[in-house]
Image 1 (spheres, helix red, strand yellow):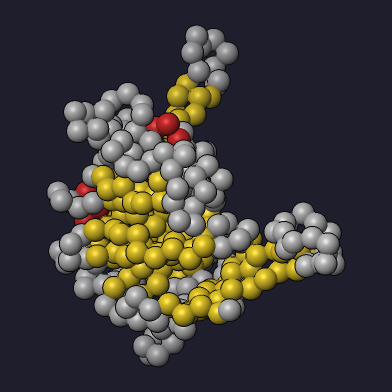
Image 2 (cartoon, helix red, strand yellow):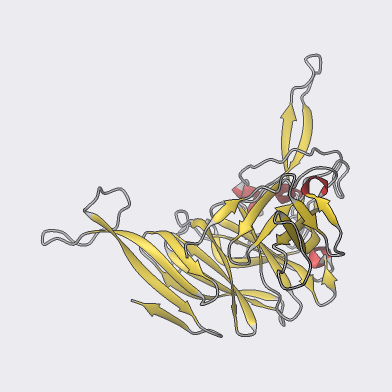
Length: 349
């Protein structure tokens, strides 16, 4: 089954069924408006929704119901902007964001729902740094004004995916750029909304700086100072400055009693273990690739197939990778990874 990432729509007259069993239209999900953005998670068979930013949102002043997408300034993410404390953490304002997951009704529960109905499976709220939660925009709405009006709209990630629960703990992976993913602990043993609780960590992986995860408080941007970040550093399977995440290449995989975050990139498959006991995110495995361009993932069997374009071998030249050579000089080489329980991974060929 081909792994797909769909920007889904939860517009009316879709019916949302909340945890109490009552029905409401998707138009009334947040403040009388549909979500700012939704994605269909093909692995978990549910919709992931990001709520719009409401006027007077927690941690901010003013706001807009209009969503926006923008790139994230790499210098800000790297922790090289102003506002750092003595420990190197970026001190910044934060804001509460809300995510939900809407699944298809269970056909075996004896309740007859409309075919357009969805059931609320997850509803969480947690803090993010202001720069990741919002996009600042200026609007010239008054010709007599000396300065344009500044509004804040919700920053929309490229992709957002919930993990399954492991010992009462759930994570949310948010991909903000083609190199950067932030992972938040959104549920723990004490319930949902743990993203702002004292002691809760977020982790950021930015392949343009360092493939190793950097921990930070939910309200803070990560600081790569003190990490192995170096444009000339050698990281197995990662070419710093050019390696990117393939579209949709943010996967959750449950292996035994642990959950792994898998990043499928243009040069490797990176596997990170979410250790719920030590509350750590650790890069555990790297599988180098050559010019990967596509992948397919089957979550039940935990099978990942990656395709790389290669030039056909000839007697006069060596095998060269390329995605620009015309057919039939180019073919796609397939590599398969079988993620067994615990740490075993079988590869073919």
